[in-house]
Image (cartoon, rainbow, N blue to C red; front, side):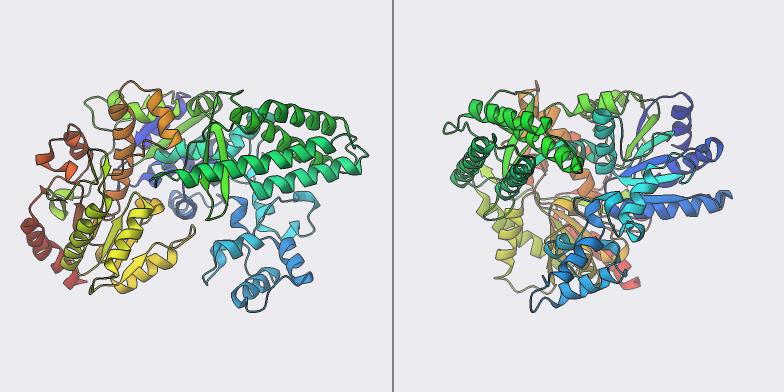
Length: 633
């Protein structure tokens, strides 16, 4: 893999390469990167999909540099602004007395930020909710104008990743920041990061399409939209412009109308597995008039003298352009965007839009650049007889142009150390397109109990829908089990749930982020249960768009996307050479008797070669392979 990367670099070409678990993927790209950096004295950018992986790579840079004898290497981790504490916001909270009585944890958080003990969320040793953290994290940074910039970790990071001289050698960022940098450079010519890098490496590239879409997505809710419009109105007032009042009133009135209509639409939908909803035509709004009023406001804002409020005026102009695009999409004036709604919480609805053709953005802005780009992940290939077939889905989705690398397979002994169990007696989740969910989940609950009793807990149970997880937990609450039930926490950090899981030898129930990125090795994890094959939801607006643009939706969209997620989920089990355990799939569509046409493709894509549909074989494997390992531990 290292040699493939060097070859791509010297040929000025891009490379995509699958690197199986355990081959030393980060070493494979960091060794050539360090040598390239040492020779050319220019920085390398590495983009990852999680903070945990960024921190691991940051440490690996120094470990490998030391082994190579390069002791002067300097690296920086660039995280999104929401990961950093903001002293200016914190001091305002203290000065204005905004800490309520009884908010002891929040008060402790504020005090430690104020004293400089907590500069990033990762510095926190106690649990903090997303809601509390959002009150003190960096938001709308004023950069050079901020009083606290000299002690601000976020400001320091942004300065370092922008540096063009040889101040930093490795810039490790999340994929979101890399994408926003590409977009910013394309739109304004100036990005967040240096232009002098010689190589870009994108790790966990199976996530990249969704990350690009997320970075290109604009979200609107009613509260923030009205706040933006009030700020626009005040700004125009302060410059003596009063022709805007009618337009402002109309914007507020129609936005309230739009959000109410969309909420009514969501409430009228029968329960959906998708968190995103299509938006039906809104006939009660004159979008053409709304577009014209927004244009007038843009013209008014463009003509006023900026003075000391240049940044505010620029921000307001951008917000108005975003509203203009939103109304143009809703009014069917623009057709090159996808739009959807979703619930931010019980009472708040969000509207989101993004460009339809993500791959065009990447082909133009990333893969046609002057530097080599290396894409890698353990799960970017499908089954197929040729490299072109195996990389087909990911290269088309990303608009990739470059070399296809030979797959580097995991060296782990899956045949000896792992058993894959597929149930052949589970009811269908849907019968003739009719919902049979409760019957399926009752049977799944019984099967989960039976399997977890075999391994005495130590199991990760993965769901593809939050509603399914919730119903199984309700079912389990009526049963006495001899292992602790641990459920995924709200928010992005799952450290406390994983710690509790390891300490209790319990059963961890999760969805979303638990399918990838978590690393629980050794006897702490003896089994992974996949409740259902994670096919994408057809009614999801993004999936719907892909289906409409494909000739064979099952083989071009559903199967490839399901396989990427399934390979990630099953990949949680074997993390080291000595790990042992069971992959249990409770979806009988994968059983031999179901005779599904995709069965062979799915099984050949997974590394588990010892397969059974016989529960007695599972019991035997556990008693002979798993229990002895646990007793050793």
